[in-house]
Image (cartoon, rainbow, N blue to C red; front, side, top):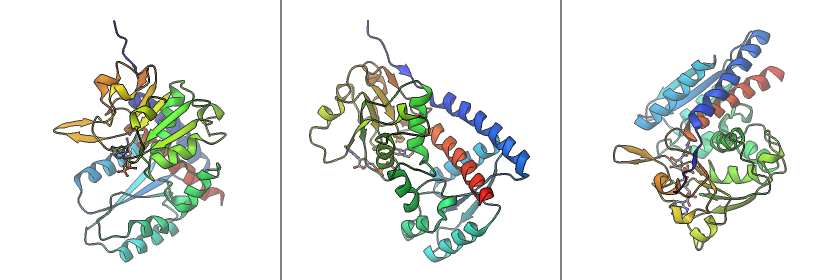
Length: 295
Ligand code: NAD
């Protein structure tokens, strides 16, 4: 008889963290008379982006935070958007600013992200925040990578002394997650840092050989069901960051049914990393509100 992997329920973990944030928000609001507010900017009419932004607004509401959506037409220019970001930087009611990606192609996304005040940069994409993270003294942690570490932490799966392989080297997931896991410490303690990290990508030779060495394998590539059972070390923990549409189904970067037979623990898609990403955004918005009231 083959045993199947433990299901790492991201949805349940996210709800638990949101309860904690809700009580911290209530305490902070009672003490200061203020409400943390997330301001999201959405440019254009991409349906997936509209859903993401709506989910973020609903999540804010659930934990007692304010949210504001500024929806601009796809004809908006880089200069107009940059001007709006400067206004929000100065707006005392806005604790955190989120620019929903992707932006229309004619907009210089890097210039927009660089324009956000680093103290309101709740996605942690600003070069100043990236620099602090790489030096092991983060102000904000990027939402999806921190969500991954939260799943491991709340499931009792330590990273210290482990071999972690991350497939995918994006600035949003792979690179910052690698930067977090190689540090000597993390906000969750040294057991959720101190890993030996391999960051694999398209040019990694013999990828299955590399991934089979990992105690913890994390896929963040955007290729449906790319990670097959034969790429996984028996007993490994597998975290699936990918969200891909396959016909009318949402699937991850991991072949769930196959890998389930080999791994000891596995995140589902949907209901794995996704709910944590939104939750860590709320956590960062609270940090931003606290930072603003202490300066
Ligand atoms: P990206 O396209 O910016 O980066 C993908 C990376 O994967 C690149 O570094 C690329 O080199 C690598 N890659 C692609 N194909 C590969 C292959 N065959 N072999 C090895 N490496 C390969 O993507 P991203 O923004 O990091 O997102 C990755 C996936 O995660 C997507 O499916 C995205 O939708 C999902 N995502 C989910 C969440 C969440 O909240 N769960 C958040 C962000 C991204």
